[in-house]
Amino acid sequence: MQIIDDKSVVGIAYVLKGEVGEVLDKSSSDDPFVFLTGAEAIVPGLERALLGRKPGDTFSVTLQPVDAYGFPRTDLIGQVSRNQFPSDLELNPGLRFQGEVAGGIRMFTIKSIEGDTVTIDANHEMAGKILTFEVEVVSVRAATSEEISHKHVHHGDDCGHHGHHHH
Image 1 (cartoon, one colour):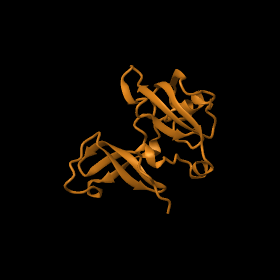
Image 2 (image 1 turned 90 degrees about the horizontal axis):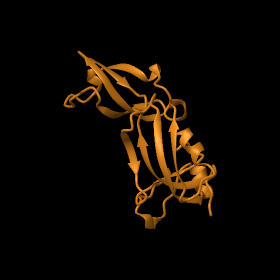
Image 3 (image 1 turned 60 degrees about the vertical axis):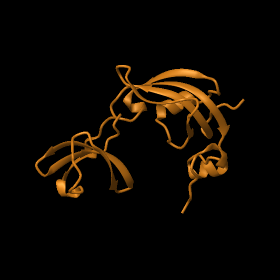
Image 4 (image 1 turned 60 degrees about the horizontal axis):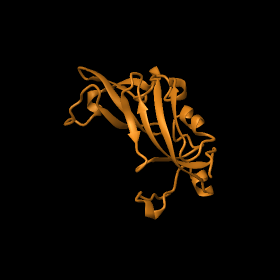
């Protein structure tokens, strides 16, 4: 039986709960979340809790922010002019959007709007939160050398996932 190590392709069913037990996210054993260990695909505390486990294992782990999405960083909060957004877009606090930054695309949340000044926040929406994962390990297999070098899972044509191309 395959044991999870730092070069495994793992499928998990999970329920992610916030500090007061509210469900924030989940996946089922029928449609598990599949990822490559050792590739920073999941929060570090959850990956550590998975190492050494095998299919059929179930567990719960509560993570402090340092082991999950970190603490909010003030350097990821900034102000931009309203004219940086499409004029027909209705802006409201809480609106999430993708924006281009040095190093790629990042998700932002609008925090406030005062006149023509929009305060945006690029912190992860779960930064600063204590999170509990209830997990069932659904599948484990050794990663291929190609998956390890590309740092992500390659799905077979028969499992219904879209392929990808490297440029």
